[in-house]
Image 1 (cartoon, rainbow, N blue to C red):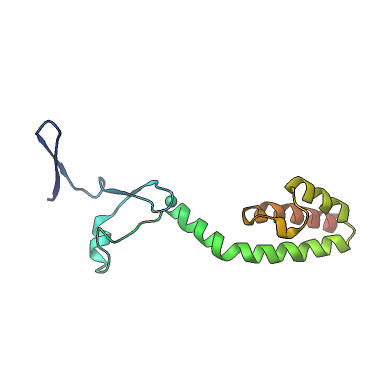
Image 2 (spheres, rainbow, N blue to C red):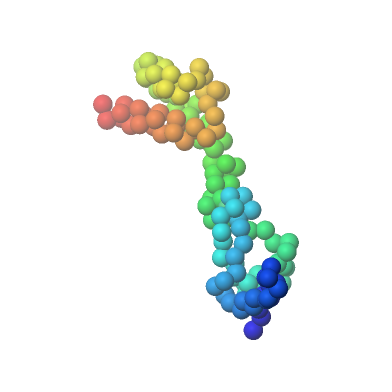
Amino acid sequence: MFYIKSKLLGGGTVKTEITDENVFTRCQKCECELPVDLVEILSDGESDLFSTSFICSRCTTKKVTDEVIVPIIYDGIVWLENILVRSGYGEEIQYLYDSFHINSLEDLRPEEYNEFGNALAKMAIGIDEG
Ligand SMILES: [Zn+2]
């Protein structure tokens, strides 16, 4: 058994046994609390307690979105917009620009790509149905 020994301000000490349920760290990015599996860290032969950084699953997913999916979506937006304009949806797209407060696709912020792309996709689906 391992335990943590902490000195209290009043002079006493507290001993806390380390179990597989009471060790936590913080996500390096969003600071949320993450449970740590000490057995896993110590057994992989590479990590150690002080140099290993932890990222929660939410931030891991977000990272992938930022780096990989967004550029593809931007190209998709340009492509889809071209088709919609040629299909006579210029007015609707202008309306969409106004609601996003942009004058061209280049003004679109990366975090808006998804929302804008979805709005365009909805228009495109409308064409198919009509
Ligand atoms: Zn996080």
